[in-house]
Image (cartoon, rainbow, N blue to C red; front, side):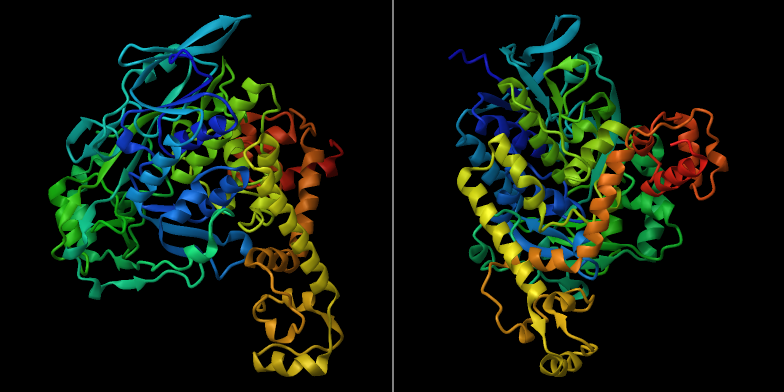
Length: 628
């Protein structure tokens, strides 16, 4: 085999690149993964965690499709929590603190031992194309060492390395994250091929030595009692046997805010040094102080970086202020009076692509065989990156193999929503997934990610026959348990004493167990004392069965909405319509619709700033006017 010929080349071995390389290799294609440093494979340059609001959903979806992130995250979990437990199951999201060094090691080992996959430390500086029938197509790449590789597909997953620059006060230097080398030259090559690039910015807080923190002054935040694994391949008993580490909470105060305000002119963000656009939903601490001037304090999370290190991460305290100010800021926090900084906070600027150039398969429209994934596509976050890497890797493989490519719908999952938002709306700032971005979020629970996506992963070839059969068996158990709960009748005189003892209204007529489950204050475990014939079932089965029953009415409405939206996708909108005159249309929605003048409801629904509520109002208006 010619060592300089391969099927798929992946540029960058971060969270996107790892998934992008594993997928085609596992599907039987020779794949080469290039990285600037073997020591930076699957690195976590920012927060040492996997998951969070909506991000946890994405990790479950990655696992359901046959990706790797969930399995690795389970293996390196040092604390697990489920967010939004006070809300409905649809918005409850798992988040784990991860041992960042161990995560990197686990992923690197997985790559090294995967058949058909080669990992090479070298910098890709140029993509090579040829023109066929009037269209550009990928021919190969050139590295900094002068090697030329031929390939059928290239996936760009450069993260924040592409022409990266680090900012700390007035100090500016070419750098990737964590002091790594930046990627130089590739931006110019991409631009020469007609790829439109934009400049984004993100940042990270300082790391502090554990021994210098007085934890007695902080609020302790322990892990949850039961850990639900991200991956169905994880041993639940083993995962739940770990000793979880605590996180802690601290707050900024008037002194902290004073220090920041007095020195804000020295921040790279406010001095004019930084030109890239930062993330709206994860701003630096100085940006928070300016934007939320009325807030007396801001919550910060003190998180361990791993089991074998004393580095502590200060979530919510990212900054580009100079080092002397960073010392003052930290020492103003309660418990941090003697804080020892191990790594200084910094902001980083980098090049990324305008994602509206992509198809929903994540292939560039104008360069056949060129794909983008992760922060290169304008997103932020490890989870969003991994999801895109997986989809890009699958589709590069499917195209080479002559099989059907995968395009996830918004109703299929948060991954589908993420990609549709990027491709259809674009982004002018680092994109972050949130549950509110999905109009189908009541359908997209963590516990039913397998129901939505395992068949797709199986059809692609990333889910084994054994795993798929286990999934089918689980689904059969879920359906049987739902049937049992819906058919098991209750006798009031037998169950009312228990209901009254827990503050619940007694039954006034014959009810089924399912009827009790639908009460907002009751759940599967609460009704256990009156469920006399409850079978012993895996937790994953009972959680899904109970959630399906509890939210059955909402689910039916959302499924009807999915069908309705599919019918209205191609509805025509008259060019002469006056959006500003439509009652009930939000001001931003009316302004955006007036600016872009979409010709169909489908086009209108994908305009940034036009909400699902705006589309509903527009549909009602068109129906009343008889234009639809």
